[in-house]
Length: 104
Image 1 (tube, rainbow, N blue to C red):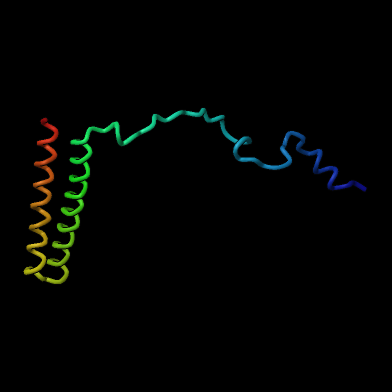
Image 2 (spheres, rainbow, N blue to C red; image 1 turned 135 degrees about the vertical axis):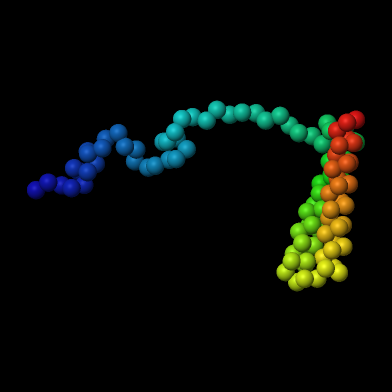
């Protein structure tokens, strides 16, 4: 009689006993050292301008979308119109501030 366990263990002698995805598949991944990013390396005016533009464009996106939804879905032009206008004005202000900082 043939022992199935013995036959199966000899069937694939190159197969590892336990699968390890870190070492058993694919090429080795070289380690890359990333440069450290320290906030103190960024000039103060760039730091402040960046975060003020992030806030300005977030307000613009929120107000534009909320105003458009109020006007379209609820037909509330008295609330949606001014909210949409605030979004449009903050978008124009953010773009002007971005262009002014870029041209410096």
